[in-house]
Length: 287
View 1 (tube, rainbow, N blue to C red):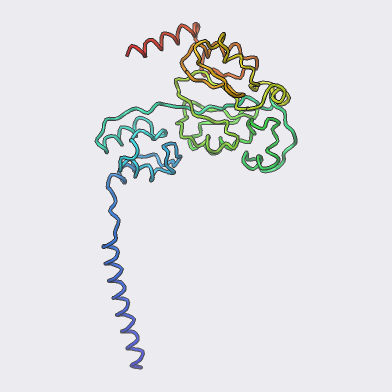
View 2 (cartoon, rainbow, N blue to C red):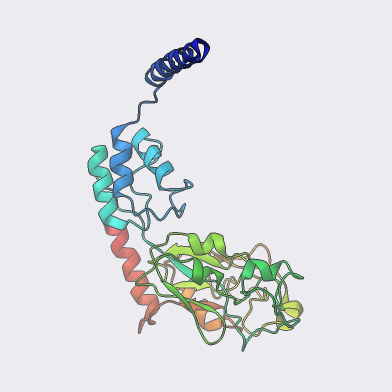
C-alpha cells in the first residue's frame, strides 16, 4: 500500500479528532443555560401560538414568564387551568385573567350591504382586499369570505347564510387570531361582561354610509347626546361613537334609540336593564 495514502489517512483522522475535541470544548464552554421553568411552562401551554399574550408564540411567552417579564395569567386560550399551573411553577398566587370574547363589528351582510363589483377571485378576505379594496361597497365592512373562520383554531366561528362570521361564544377562547387575520379590522375582543357593543367601524358620514349599508353607523351622535348618555358612557369626538363605560344603563338606551340599530346586544335583554345594571354596579362598588 502506498505510504502516502496511509499518511493521508492518519493525518485526516488526527485532524478529525482535533476538530471534534475543539467542537466539544466550544459546546461546553459556550452552552446557553436554559431555565428549567421555561420547559415546564411551555409544556403547560396549549401550543396555539396565537400571540394573545403579547408575545409571538408560546415559547416566547414561556421565556417571558420564567424571567418575570410577563405574569402567568396572559394565556387566554389556556384559561384558569393554565393560569393555575403557571402560577404554581412560578410560586405566585394565581390571578384570574379578565375573560374576553371575540365579536363581529359589522352587520352588513348580503342583505344589508351593497357590492360595488362582482368578485370571482380567490375566496380569501386578504386577497379580495387587494382588488380595488374588495367588492364590498363599504370600504370598512366585512368582505364575507370567511378568512377569520378558517383561521380560528378552536372551531369557534362559522359563516352564516347572510355572508357574515358568527362567533360561538361557548367555544371562543379570546386567542386573538381572528382579530389579526381580518384585513378590515372588524373583529375585536371585548370583556365577556360587556353586553352591548357597537357593530360598525365605518368612519364615513350619513350619505356615504346610507348609499352602501342599511345598518351602518353614520355619525348622527344620538347615542352620545346628553339625553341618551347623560353619564358620558358614550362619547363621540369623530365620526364613530366610543363606549367609555361598559356597565352603564345608557347603553340600553342607545340600543333602543340608534336609528340604524348599529348597537348589538349579546344575550337576552333584562326586563329592567337600567335597574339591573345599576344594582350590579352598586354591588361591585360595595365589594
